[in-house]
Image (cartoon, rainbow, N blue to C red):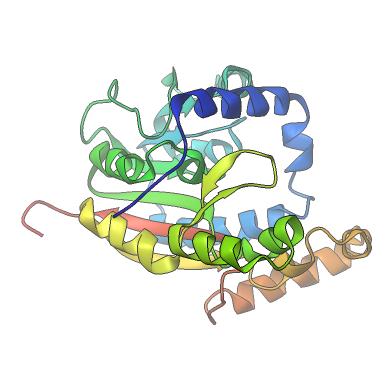
Length: 275
């Protein structure tokens, strides 16, 4: 039985939080930021799966300011941008005037009823919208529903094992809190918002139940996540040479397995009819 502790009022609180962060969001998650280490290795996974495909109908669900849509907009013939935060969505829409057909929708990932079945070749859901969704099981079902058979779905979610670091900082060594979190995956996140943190098996099983094959689930970044909030570490990677060394290391570690120190990046393929 899956449980989530997020109610509609808290969805609006999340929207308010992300609206307030929209101004500095692109700077915080720029290509030279610590977060781009995961972005770059994640992009490599999806670019390999897409190969040379272009002319795609793409949906970016939980698009934020359009970071991930921007990576793949050159492959798009149409683009749907969706987010719960109006300010984020407005920033994203302004970025994509060059795409032939752009639409926007204010909606949570688990409430995509305005979108027709099997509409997109590529569905992005990055930045952990599923973790913040009121009903993450329905959210996964919705992502699969709007994807065409044979189409790709690329998501990031908070990792349950990865969240142990933050749990330790918040609750120290409280074992009751630890056991409850490990059993349910539900927690108040570092932003003060409720979220669900996934295990690799849980994520794969839920997508299978919704009709999608798991192509890969990776924990990203593999090593640097352990130091993300260490100021001394951040100072060292301001050196471009050190930054590129770290990117290269993450590429090498990507397929070697990891206990999940930060996020899970999942790549899924919608099942073909009769498959």
